[in-house]
Image (cartoon, rainbow, N blue to C red; front, side):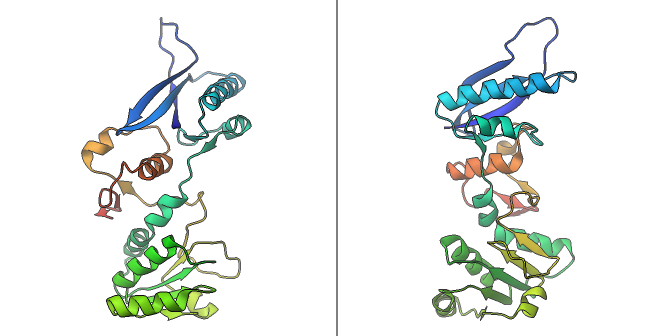
Length: 247
């Protein structure tokens, strides 16, 4: 199981443990919920000790990943206990095609006629899915892939009648309306980059059906929580909306 860390404000007139851990669930995802008492005047040193205490208890329970509060300041303490934040990489790649559409619309561009470029170091299932979705939505798709691209292009042309430009030039990649990077590139300059490998890049607006939204802990890091729910199979295709349109 994973853990969900949350801050708990102190209650006047009541004595409560500074750190509590219990089993709970969010949208039927079983997890350990760790509540750490934090007031507006709690010294940073005490706060870090509480994070360490929670991390040690969770690690003894077999937890290695946690959904953290937004802007969590004590990541080093958790790392010392062997805990890491839930990765959002899989979520980012699953939303890539909808993310591109949203980004283009935000800039006032028509998605259908846009030139979208995809760069990846190797052909993976995530790359295949993203390129397929983009090819069905956009007129011009450029694919920069060291190997495996020829067969993918033939397959998409045969099944859907779409065409891709394989092996575009550096100038074509830099001139694309959206550049989707599955791996880091230092040789390209394009302001419209979706760096799917970079978890520090802000995610687009993401929403769920209202009943599911109401069940989400409001202070949890949204990307980490949605990634955990998706990884567990709680979120089904079509329930995630990027910029107001269902994925």
